[in-house]
Length: 171
Image 1 (tube, rainbow, N blue to C red):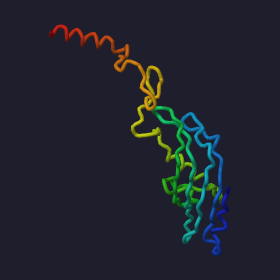
Image 2 (image 1 turned 135 degrees about the vertical axis):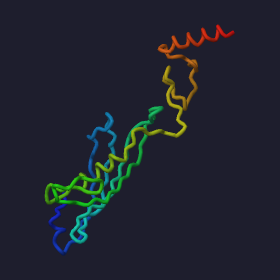
Image 3 (image 1 turned 30 degrees about the vertical axis):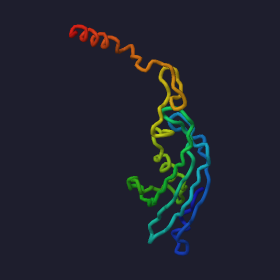
Image 4 (image 1 turned 180 degrees about the vertical axis):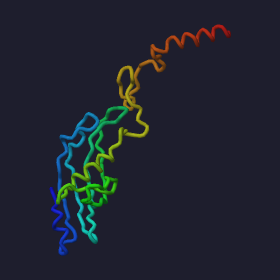
């Protein structure tokens, strides 16, 4: 949805509201397609004494899994922005400045990157999630497995042998 900014340069219109739903199901992030729910954009573009400003909110459900136990999670993601729109091509893009390349603006071009910046690298189903057993794969939140609790990484076997030989010499 493009908003024609020529409407705002006239004296009669000082704001243009927008509300749309977009589909980001094809967007890949961290090797997955987490935006399976519709993405809702709302807000307005205003002309405040000759300064064009886009204020908006974007909301969606981010589908991912727990980083420890792989339980599916749906996280409500929300981002808000208050961005100045500039037609000066020499202006540097900053956090609150968007450089226009034409006489219209698509709110998704500003709000979707703000939404993606809200995504964390990992999510947990609970702070005290015990995760999966590294040996048998059992979910430790649901059941206790019978795996030996102190299995040693074979790469450290030589170090273990040195420690054991030091203990034998000291005895």
